[in-house]
Image 1: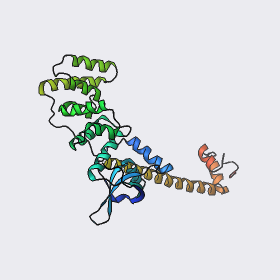
Image 2 (image 1 turned 180 degrees about the vertical axis):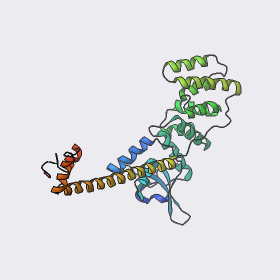
Image 3 (image 1 turned 90 degrees about the vertical axis):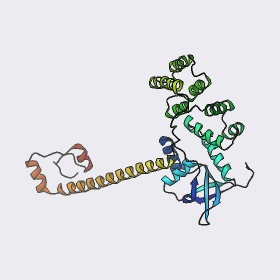
Image 4 (image 1 turned 30 degrees about the horizontal axis):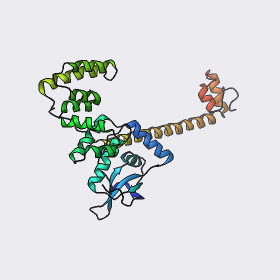
Length: 299
C-alpha cells in the first residue's frame, strides 16, 4: 500500500462522503463525541480518499473517522475538515478495517468480523498485525478460530455467551474432551463467565459435540451506524420539544404573575380576598410576585 503519496487537509461537503465500512457504536461513547465536538470543536480531521462522482463532481470514500462524521451530521454541519489521501479502493477499505480494529473500545464481535474480511482480501497475518497494532498471538488465535470453521463458537462470541478467550480454548481442545466442562467451571469461578453464560456455554458444548462446529445461520455484524444517528436525532428532537414546552409553560407563568401583580393593586380585589379568608398565597408564588401576604398589597 502506498503511504508516501501527498496528503492535504481541506473542508469537504458531508453529503459527498461515502462510508466504506460502517460500524455499530456505543451510544454513550457517540454522545461524548458529539458533546466534545460541540464544546471544543474537531481536534482531528477525518481521513478520506477522493474519487470522481457520477455527476463529475468529487466524491470521497471515508477511511477513518465515522464517529466524527456522524457527530457533524447530528450537529447540522454541512462540511467537515478532512485529510485527503491518495490510495486505491482496496487500500482504503483495508485502512478502514484496520482503523476500526485498532481503535479503543472495540468488541470481540467487531474484531472477528473485521479480521475475517481482511483474510478474504488475502491480507496476511503479519500485515494484519502491522496495520492494527494487535499482538501476533492474538491475531493468530482469531485466525485459528475462523479457519477451524468454529461457527458455533463464533456465534456464541457474537451473542456474548462466551468470551473470545474461552472460545479459543474450546476450539483448541478435542470435541469430546472431558476437561472442557472443568474449564468452563474455572472460568465461572474466576468471574470470566456469569451464571447464565455458564449454562448457555454448557449447552453450546453439547450441541458442538453432537452436531459439529458449523452453525446453520451465523449472524452478520449489524450495520447500524446510520440507525444510531437516527436514534440520536430522535433524542435531540425529543429534547428540543421538551425545551419548547418548558418555554411555553414559562411564558404562561409570566402571564399569571403579571396578572396577579395587576390584581393586587386593586383595593376592591384585595378586600374581597380578605372577606373570603384567602389572605395568603403559596410561598413559591408569593416569592415570585414579591408578596408575603395579601396584607399590605404589592411590596
